[in-house]
Image 1 (cartoon, helix red, strand yellow):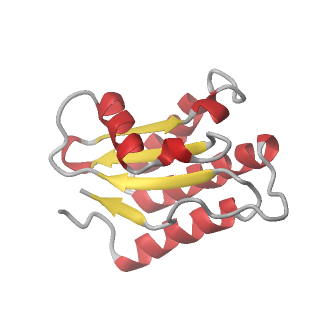
Image 2: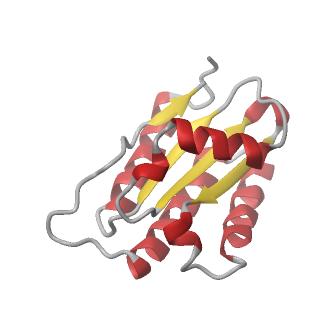
Image 3: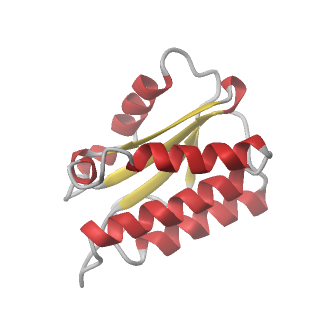
Length: 142
């Protein structure tokens, strides 16, 4: 297991997740995959399942997967969110992250994308009384 982010960067990303999730029933996770093999999107789909992200009540989970050694990443959303966002939404988030990654600003790029994803989730899946945090907010590593 590699530790890609330092404690301050991890805290920044976790705070971004928690802030985004305050306003939505949606769930956002970040995963770092060491020794990633195969297509990053296919791998992300497998990780999505392993993390149980498909089990949210409204199918509105979003996963950001980074494979640092391969310099690749993917953002995938579950069925509920994919049915709502525009076809270019994920590409826009990818481009935002990529622009920051090129400058070595990984935590910043991820945090900004999380903010925007959270705003979109809020639009389609606003927080309602009694909504539970269905998934952990921490960064998962493999």
